[in-house]
Length: 308
Image (cartoon, rainbow, N blue to C red; front, side, top):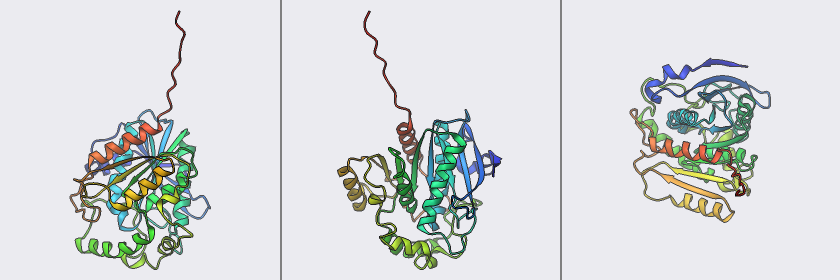
């Protein structure tokens, strides 16, 4: 449908995103892959306008989306400064994208992420695409990345076991409700569900049922398939050392020949305890943007010349 605005985030979100980028943002509403509805998207573009590589950001859902929205927006700017185009989007049934009559399913999340990757390639002509996924978005990113040979995959506090996530989310979301808003004052726009509170709808929603069904999505490691690729796993809570489920996932990937890098910042606020004045760590943004831009950089070749 074309770009509706250019650089709109620079003024309205400047106080939250930091200094303006060495590039610009393009906001676009684009049709879903199955023709059912329209998705909201925002591309962070390098100053030169073009890019040979790009990253698709697969956001989390429900109240995790509100926690992570700020971080994703800032990462898009960091990647743009590094010369990497970045496509963010809202799944159908969330944020500014069209609603779905029955609500989103895991299948529609994956379809929307695939469509976002197509849009990034079509609009920017990028040669290589990487993916970033947070929480449930990590499962989505893994499924889509599996379709792209050698596509690097960065994961922020990923969900490894979707059934455990559904069980845990009820109590965690209840705690967030008692704490109040997790967004900075005046900040609007995270892709939260279009209807109903997350804590009372997830278990009985189509998405919740999909996450409980191993035939739809079993676990993070198997979602990515068996074709080796580089992985960055970033743990985002106050813990020294990797959590047991992350250690197990890393071990399974390494046994399959995947190259896995791990990062964690023990000074980060716990994922579920952010507060209105919360700011994401620059260390996480720096590590992730550097890792992705390096893995997406064109391979260098050395030309040998014979001695005279």
